[in-house]
Length: 625
Ligand SMILES: Nc1nc2c(c(=O)[nH]1)N[C@H]1C(S)=C(S)[C@@H](COP(=O)(O)OP(=O)(O)OC[C@H]3O[C@@H](n4cnc5c(=O)[nH]c(N)nc54)[C@H](O)[C@@H]3O)O[C@H]1N2
Ligand SMILES: Nc1nc2c(c(=O)[nH]1)N[C@H]1C(S)=C(S)[C@@H](COP(=O)(O)OP(=O)(O)OC[C@H]3O[C@@H](n4cnc5c(=O)[nH]c(N)nc54)[C@H](O)[C@@H]3O)O[C@H]1N2
Ligand SMILES: [Mo]
Image (cartoon, rainbow, N blue to C red; front, side):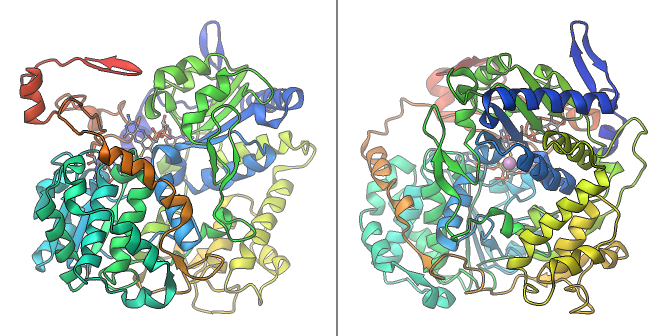
């Protein structure tokens, strides 16, 4: 599909400005000056919190966007920061932060060596993996079964992945926390708890035992839609397997009990001795580690340090959840959001209650979007600044390799030249930041030299070379060429696999990666306890209070009647679309219509629905046919 994207006539190839006649091309210098003037005006008149920033999912795949959005974030240090995180992984990151001491310290399934894979709320045959990053997921899961292993998928829907598994457990939406806690109950009840390598590194096991005592399989069975015998059998199978993985993803995060579910699933790994063992879940050791960027000075996870103005939502890693977004724009008063800069995001499709967001965006005094397309969201922008297309710039995956099933490093060079009418995204972000910081008199090169020095100052203290390399030495060795290459080289060389600027002669450098056409395989995941634990105590709290405080809400849910009168709507991912986009590319959009509702046969009968017919669905915030 990348070629279709490259050739798409609708892809923007110049900056455009909204006028009464529609979007019209505008020059780069003029566009950047306009954005700086308007964002600066709102900030100066109403304070920096009046400017909101949204960073969308595709930045995760583009190192320059992540690194240089960070520069804009420093130029506009607003509390109104948003991203796709709360539509996706925040429950997992918060839970990993509280248990392992870092949002990125999430254990990853050792899919290639495990004997038993219990997968909650993930559909890698459509998604390719997510917080279990690897190509060829279908082959890897087939190989697991071919070597005698077992794949069990816990998902309300019989997905493509469930269809290829040994067993599909059709949990009710939101039932995972209760289901996994009942499995924990069985582990204690039947004497199956074996901590393995984690034994010396965990605390509060008694607290977990006391909590689990309450979740008898018979108690949760109706609510989560899984019978008690199955719950007991799954717990026994997990404990008996030579090695096993319990893994949860989107479906366990974006649901009513996300953080509890992520926690309970990790307990299954810990209590069966599968944390930090081959074939269990392990902590990757990425060549570029951004852990330094998501850590607070005192080692506590960046979570709940302040609250949003209107709804009182907790801050998470410097951001608010998207639940706060529209209300912060709509609600008058000091700190009301009046301007927005958004990169690679389309919340008018991808966030809940999108119609409200659609209306809210109309109230903004100024909006600048970084995107290839005029879409449902960017149509509200005063200015759209398009990036170069993916085939036309180099990249290194600085994000998802934190979750890869093997440690690998790969530099992907540009395949073609970008159109002359485009500018690299990093340069545009840097020039805008420069003007907002009042450094307009400096050249891009001068400002980038400051940026790379700041990256060095941030990354060095947590580097294995912290005591050997100095900031001056590192910066001098990186050369004068501005841009993300330099920052990536820096992070590679300071990383665990890096050359430490000559200290480890055969260690990684960007130059070394550039001549490795197919990347470098650094090997399978390896045990990393206790080194991977970054909590203040150096141990893993098994029952963090900020997670267990939510148990009474789960108890209320369990005690409610779970009759058949309610219908639960869940999302569905398709292998040929990407969140809100890619619908403009013929090779990906062709074929049968995919915007369909799937319904369980029982519900279909109850509501008199016919296969292929029309259904009308009404919810609190909208209606669909
Ligand atoms: N309906 C629906 N909603 C969803 C999801 C879904 O599958 N369906 N998935 C959920 C999940 S898991 C997530 S992470 C969020 C993501 O939701 P968003 O953060 O909104 O991200 P996307 O929808 O992936 O892409 C948004 C925009 O990024 C632009 N873009 C792509 N690549 C680049 C680039 O390199 N640079 C720039 N500047 N722009 C680029 C695309 O043109 C597109 O308009 O959505 C969540 N909500
Ligand atoms: N082709 C393609 N690939 C993608 C994307 C894409 O849009 N298209 N998006 C990318 C992104 S941003 C992400 S975050 C990843 C996501 O990667 P995954 O998490 O693997 O993908 P999903 O398909 O969202 O899987 C979530 C599953 O959870 C189920 N589910 C819903 N509610 C519940 C529940 O309460 N309990 C349980 N147990 N299951 C539930 C759904 O039926 C669904 O099958 O995929 C990435 N890869
Ligand atoms: Mo996502």
